[in-house]
Length: 371
Image 1 (tube, rainbow, N blue to C red):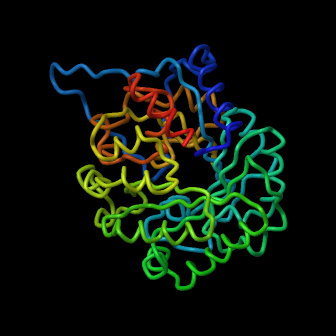
Image 2: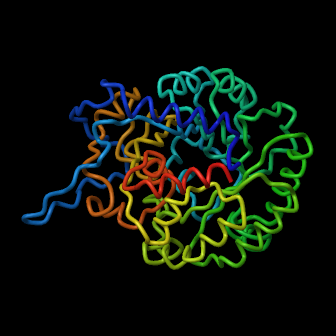
Image 3: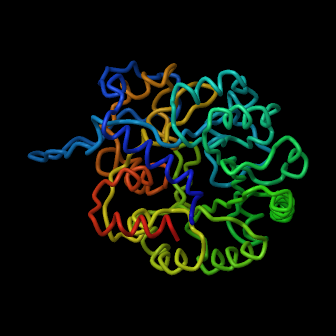
């Protein structure tokens, strides 16, 4: 199976329950005060064309989270070319979210899956306690890491079917080290993967596809990782953060369609964790709306809105994030920053919620889950 049956059942039950009875306090619309301190905020949104009537998001009145993107810190030991975090949050790079506050965010949001990211979360002094606290709340965890600190801190964790180390690898050794701007990172990440697998942990990898990425090399990477017993892979196109401002390395939608034209074959051969509906979206074979509230982000400044990639404000409470973010202003065709975005944190929730899918798609998703 792609996921443990307990995880599949838990997620399915959670989604069904919230689709039937979404929490009413999250469905309100409240005017927000602009975050004037944010240097990356773009104030203008794309107006509707004369006579054009925008279609509201099909889940706009049934909003609830699925995966919490928890960033306990933004400090990192690397300066990866495509990373916006270390640039956007430069003024708060030394700050950390206290352990108790991290766990309060987990409780406040209630999402069944927590992706601990950053920055490099393995640099968080209390990372072992944070993981243990989230597991005590019966959440599933993807601990996203560059892999360089696994050897040093592995003893702080215990294997658990709800915990995955999610190691970032953007290619084989030469090109991965170029992407992260330091030699030797690939070797250390691989060493960390081997140690984690030997200790009984589940390990996945996360790969970002850039304009210069050779998809044949990604296939080579997956073949190599297969020999290490890696449990699965996540893969998504790179998105142009406002803080990075380098269009040369990022992909347009047409670029994404070209890069992922053969993804169905790779997904059949390897344990790629993206859903078939999302992969068809990457190929340009179907349309999905962005469901950014499905993957909310919490960091040192609070709840980041509207999404993991764009920052137009930070909110003190999760309810404020859900009700004060002007969701109708975002998404493809509504905001120029969204026009080329196809990343999984915005679109996998749509696939999970069954938006724009039919009976055949549901059967396809079931077969994919059970494979």
